[in-house]
Length: 157
Image 1 (cartoon, rainbow, N blue to C red):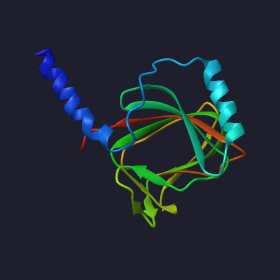
Image 2: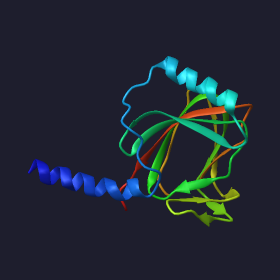
Image 3: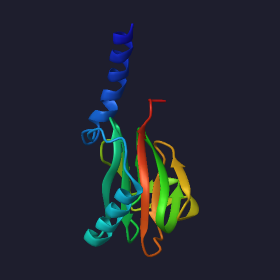
C-alpha cells in the first residue's frame, strides 16, 4: 500500500515538475545570514529585470529570493499559486483582471499590462498569495523590491 501511495504521489508531481525547469536539489534550511548574503549579492549583481536565487527547496517547491529595481512585465502561472513575502522595498501588486497583449509561454503567460485588476500596495513585511491562473504584476517599484516567493503546483480544477 505504501508503494502504491508513493507511486500515486510521484505520478501527480511529475506533470507539474516537467512544465518548468528541473526541481532544485533538496536544501531544507537557510539561515537569516545566508538570506542577507544572497540579498547583498543580488543587489550587487543586479541587471534590468528580475534576478533570483533559490533559498531553500524540496522537490517542486523552491523558495526563491527575487530582486527588482523596476516593474517587470505582468504574467500568470497556469498551474501554480505564488506565495509572496516582502523582505525589502515596496511596489504595487496588481492582481486579477485580464492580461493585455497576452502571450502563451507554456506553463506561464506574459503581457504588457493588466486591464481591470485590483491594485494593492506592498511594503516590507507584507504577504500576498496569488492563486494559480491569476494575472499579477509587480508595478510601481519604489527604489528596490525584494521578495521571497514560493510557487506551489496546484491540481487541475
